[in-house]
Image (cartoon, rainbow, N blue to C red; front, side, top):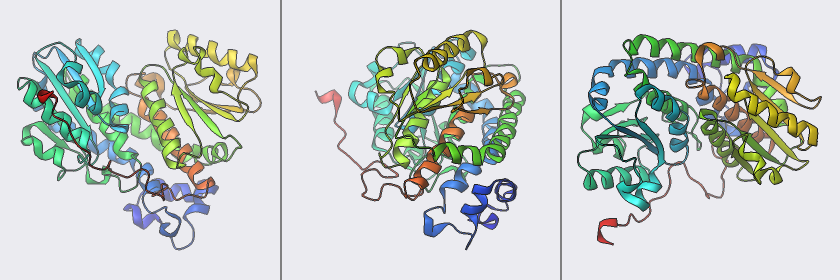
Length: 407
């Protein structure tokens, strides 16, 4: 995978020049295909550029999206697996911006419980997120809700214009993202963050100047992600190569969605060899702290808000006092040094104060993606297809969709 394989991406070019691990990975024939590196690293590194493209696409659909949201009393953001977590990364921001009940809900919950799983406010809007749009849950959930409650309005955000989910609605209710975001690798990376940012636009659509502010935020996120990847590539490679055997990802609010996605990436990309879990900072005390052993890496996604961070810092201080865990990776704004022990690592995310918690979860996700990518390589697996035995697949295998109405 040389620079020519990423459409002249200056980000990868700069990585090869400035980060030793990138130079090592990308040398040789320049394709990375033999090492299973043909897609995943490119898809991680293309995110800043695709975020700008997503901002432009959503801005062009502002009027249609405002029409879908007009008078709505509830919004459900739904998806399966990573797509569900993408909704969790933006749910609170949407709820605060729109001033109505917003819920992130798995497609599976809709299949098992029907429209009763949705928030009660009507008129309601259901936003379906999907990379390929071929997941049985995605299509099945949309069909079930349309049949059960025809009055609910729908918006599909997908990376695949030819997917089954996109074909369920007419063009007015479907936004297709850049084809590059339809990740070819097993795990979702650029698809995840772009779907999350696309869904985040619904909150901006309620403001007086949605297009300008939304595009400004996405541009700031893209610039921050470029700096993060360019400066912390080798750092994350070193952390991933440390001798931990399990991982805990901690986050509050929107960052809990990021933590769930990061834990899933670690689990998927190591084919289950590195067990990982996600928890909130306050929730860790209620039993899950028993999971933290001497071989556990604690990845702390810290808020930028003072009130929330007080609780998070208290938990980190408690972990330091108890001396549990192998090490911590502290990710957030400035002033991380006082929380870090001698074995810990710090990654400062640029521009968090200007972005705010509601918009910045995708930056933490990029940290989790790179950490899992490097650990995948460390386990001797291929990032493009780490599940060699086929236990998991790029698209969940088809399964029977049961008719709830007949029960």
